[in-house]
Amino acid sequence: MLQDLKLERQYDGFLYLAEARRNPPKLRSHHHVELELNLVVRGTITYVVGKRRLTFPARTLVWLFPEQEHQLVDATDDFQNYIAVFRPSLIRQACHTPRYEGLLKTRTEHDGVLHMMLEPETFDLVRKTMDSLMPDSLNPDLLNKETGFGPGSNFVFAHNDPDGLNAGLHHLLLLCWRSNNNGQALGSAVPLHPSVRRVIKILSEGTAEETLSDLATQCKVSEAFLSRTFHRQVGVTMTRYRNSLRLARFWELYKQADERSLAEIVYDAGFGSYGQFYKIFVQTYGHGPRVTISTVQ
Image 1 (cartoon, rainbow, N blue to C red):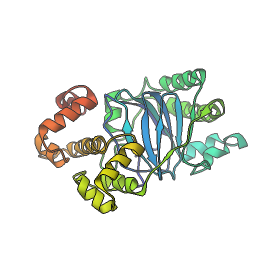
Image 2: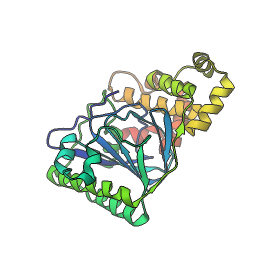
Image 3: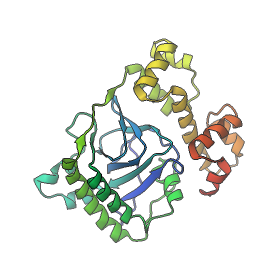
């Protein structure tokens, strides 16, 4: 799915720090015309890109090119991950020599995802560069709840110093590309069984209400095989993945600002009870829904 990041004309991109205790799960498969860069600061994040699953630990620099369909499928409870995106126009203005010509491509020439484990000194330099662009940004809670949340969101990114941000993004882009040469390549991705890929597609595009039996029937495999293979290859149980989808759906419905009560939204999101929703919400954010919801109103 091509996702419009709704960047206004004065911005050459954006940058924000996604954090476990602030960030709603965004689990829809998508791509966008902008180049995306991830720097994992703490914990791990897990993506499905094409037919592979990749898990990235702290100090990993991850490039997601415009034609690469990618989907976040899990993150540890302590993760922090800087996400930066760069407009094609910025990349064209910044890259004129062979050293940076790879940034002009819409898809990596590498098999899978271009990513590197940075040396500690390089990681600190890149992180400090990102940190320096954050003081004039919007409130971290707002950025985490809204940025890039999908086509149903009316949120538009803003920064109090667009010129400073644009100059910083220019420098950051070139710095991170050079840093690839100072890093250590990580291991290969995990290829996904066709049934696992199909389950991810079914659940992420639907309401996450299909039973394990339903899914196994559609994939023409046994329930035991599907459950075991999903857990082994994706790295999380199907139940955890399904609950993350329900939580993402809850936020989508909540931000529609209609007349439904909180309990009605919980059930419409696919939770079997408010108690189930409350338990999963606390596990994700560390406190009850009333505290987190008050920060997005």
